[in-house]
Length: 154
Image (cartoon, rainbow, N blue to C red):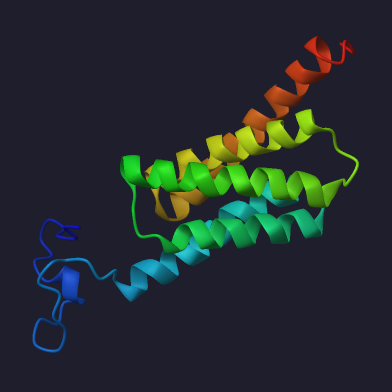
């Protein structure tokens, strides 16, 4: 993977080409990994906390942090974020209310995937906040639709 950034010709080796060597550009920058971990934890915690549960916030933060470790953005980041977000959405729904129906779990998974994909595509702290906002909005819209059209409780 090419980690070259404009104006940063040695970014792929932490700006120290004498000490570090990565001729194929495959090694992630440790600073980027830590940044991704923290960003993902922030986004996941925000999204989990929106449901009002500390346990959901912790589970969201864990999944967000795991997704953030993978140093990719753009389309690849959206795919990775979507996969982790789907898992996070299902897990937070299951932890938040063990009596949730399958429909509730699917809604949580889809909303998590939307938030994870948005956050992963953008990357960094802005991506974490944008992803959390997108996930929360998607979950609220899906819950409203599910409640009205499936449960017939408009």
